[in-house]
Image (tube, rainbow, N blue to C red; front, side, top):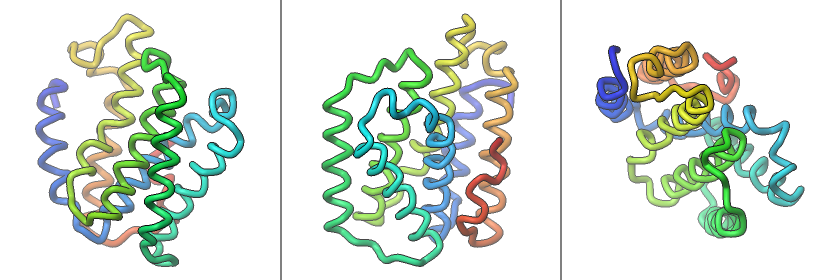
Length: 186
């Protein structure tokens, strides 16, 4: 892949090929990675209750992936409202990579919960951009830009893109469970 535009087009196409039975895995995989990136500093910005809420939602999503729980619309409605309140309460500085991780995590969790409610595809492409968006902020701290050739060729960008396409290939082959939640992520 030579530039961000070609990646953008290809990931849009490929995410639409993810089988329905693996869509929750795809979204949860991104949320898990975002949470792992911000777990050491999330309590600096959020209350213990808010962190607990995020953990509870992520656990619930993995339980859905593993078919240990059913979709509970009232629980999802409540969680979406609580996520909205977090987003409204805090002004996340999207130029700070730590705060950008938390912002992307909250937005991604909400996107997946909307999917759980509606059953309509659409979140899978948007969620795929979450980690790329965080990496872009990291690159900007180094005076690089993901839209430039140099920024796009950065190892962080290329490793993330490779992981995404490899995961899509896996998801097309078989149903994955939470035991693969750290697969292709460091």
